[in-house]
Length: 212
Image 1 (cartoon, helix red, strand yellow):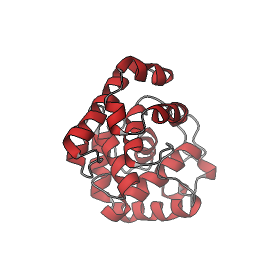
Image 2 (tube, rainbow, N blue to C red):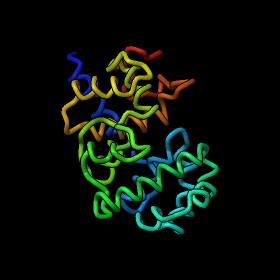
Image 3 (cartoon, rainbow, N blue to C red):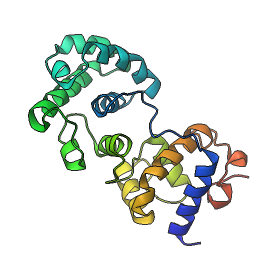
Image 4 (cartoon, helix red, strand yellow):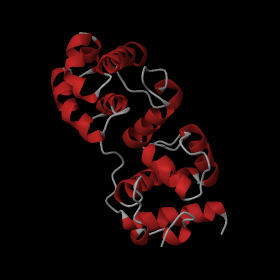
């Protein structure tokens, strides 16, 4: 089976397996909150981020207020996430840039988003796909990267940018967002890092790494 056809079949099967798969596991109410939460999620769990962001956004609900906040106050709120001093700098500087450069509106292009401190290509792809339903790339987080390599859709283990490039070459653009959403769910529930549950996998017949 041609690689692109196999990839599309994988998406179709996973769509049936995970009809409830969310676009993100972060809790947010608007694009600005998602931007900040996604920056905070670097090297932290979504569950951990979801514990601190309600406190953060209750105190600093707008880009203006967060941009004017004292670093030490922000750092104290996000302390449980680790690297809190650096992340406090990232999110306050990003808030200022949203206000000063984009009229307090989160921009809708990858090139604009990656100008913010702490925003990688992956982070920008999350914002675009989840908040605006736009596709300029494929979100490659830990789960998407691991599962994509196991599925034989990339050989670049632990190299997100190269994995993303491979996936963009295989999948039609209209499936980029769905692929990341569904593969992410599959990685969390079945194709886990240490003990993948291959016998329970809905795409095991299409996976060269499957042990069934």
